[in-house]
Image (cartoon, rainbow, N blue to C red; front, side, top):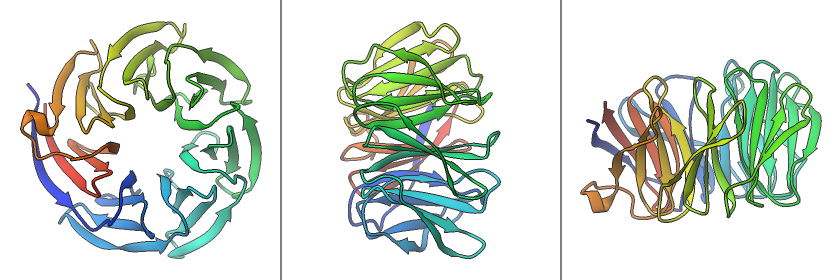
Length: 301
């Protein structure tokens, strides 16, 4: 039996929040959206710390790579700002794309950064030199999301043309296109054990794909509207989905059964608009929304 308690609501954003990311430093959270800056929060006392730096356009993606004192902010303009924590300032501006950046991920094994854009390409950068290494033409349309499997030999891209495309992470050669969703793929996440891939799309479906055979294991009519994000719990066998239907759902990652719904209809003082992104901080689930709020949920399993 999963119990959920809302323990805090962080307010201060004046516009929709599109993305949330935990810092490499414990207890620190970053959020970004349709505001004038990237915001830093203290999770220990649930307080606003500061606006880290101003931005010229909406932030759609934030990424803090492990073992690097860097934070990357992907903007609607196509630019990626690089903030250096040691120098406490924006030190680089990555300007490969001219259309919005929707996701940023990194490979620790390769020391590389992957940036997905509306232009249909994924640019690959060296984390050490911040120089462009490679550009992959993934789709004729938008690449919305990226996930790298635990062994870091495969990377999956979710596209607006309804497809999920798997690439070999070593040489960035295409391996397989997964066809099944009927609308744009907004969310992708490999399971922590690497056995399967979970996808969520604008068609409100969640699909489970076998990581070896690429066969569809299960289709779940998960939400009423688009599935915006998928997040696995760091240690427990559960994953959460966030939707445009204003709800968060928690699923069992063994049998894929629904275990909890967090929504206003279920009696929670939850988000009033689309839930866009989540992050697990231990047993706390952090969610951000078009309603301008960051909510911290205490989840007991």
